[in-house]
Length: 95
Image 1 (tube, rainbow, N blue to C red):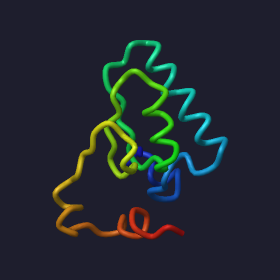
Image 2 (image 1 turned 180 degrees about the vertical axis):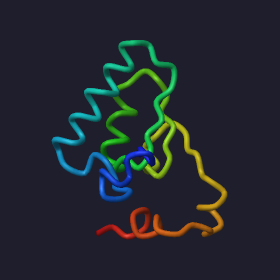
Image 3 (image 1 turned 60 degrees about the vertical axis):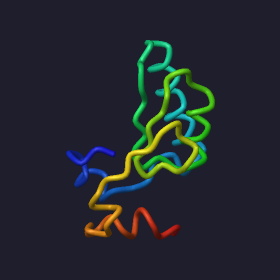
Image 4 (image 1 turned 135 degrees about the vertical axis):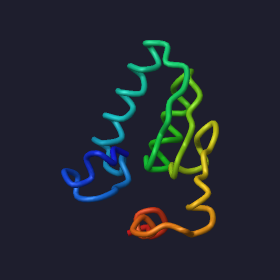
């Protein structure tokens, strides 16, 4: 997720939904893994893509809205308490 590019991308969108997007994310994650990155943060990545990346990389993955397949999770207090606006549809509406 790149908040600085929200206007260019048309809003917050889950990444890795199409096979092409998921493949690109996997390629990027594997490149970072080969570079010996010590952690990968997967924010708003589709659950299947996040789980696949977690399985194929040595570096632990930390998910933010990316499903249970990551090695660890970050839960923002505002999200936990429902104190958010605008992201609710992206995070909780499967459409």
